[in-house]
Length: 334
Image 1 (tube, rainbow, N blue to C red):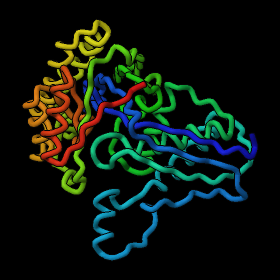
Image 2: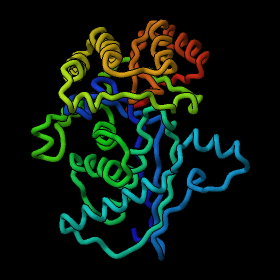
Image 3: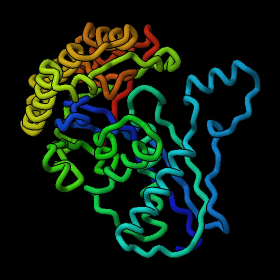
């Protein structure tokens, strides 16, 4: 075991219902998307070494290469995510009086998750790193606690604006219903998580923008500030979106796909009431709906998820969304 190479993964996730209420003590349902993932390799070495990948190296062919690189991966690669994960893992062990063997390692990562399109690429790298460290040091972190540690690595260490949803989905995998009840969160340090049987899900498609640089421009939204000030419209709408996840849980269990289809569309329409949506993102949703499918964001924008009734609708989605530089896939959750 001492010289074994440890390989771990964490997959992309798509918010099926309820987002963005996970940041507002709401409820969500997410599915894992095994088509894309972050992979970690970890093996013993004399010193602790994080191997830099292409996006971590500050060497470029020319100015155009630099611009393309920043548009694709931002100003940072994945090394800082791994560094934050290792720090939080070490602190968790200290705080819980877990003695870990004094041995070093080299860690390298690879991710196929499309960047900047709301498929949780950053948290996948942190989650996969945590899994590798747990294996290497033979430490068990309870399943319900792990997402909170992953979130802390991103929010507290790196200042990334994020909620628990992505990390819960990537920890539990499959399809998960999450209730982020405020009292429960404050008392237990985690939400109420229920795994749903993925085989109960209908035909789902996922589409994401391939011209990333056009997606990455953030649209200003002041929802958090309005929520914290007690804005009645925001609080009411957030509550209504959270309720959609609860109704969605029943619809999935009962295979009531017509209701689920309506809930998905309603989720996006209610989001539009309190958030600004860029033209590029609106075009994604409208194009999919014209094909006869439901559509909502998987995360904060850049990719959508919905239900398609049959192969004819799926083919139409592929053709029409390709015209606006979007790729369509069938997400694998199992």
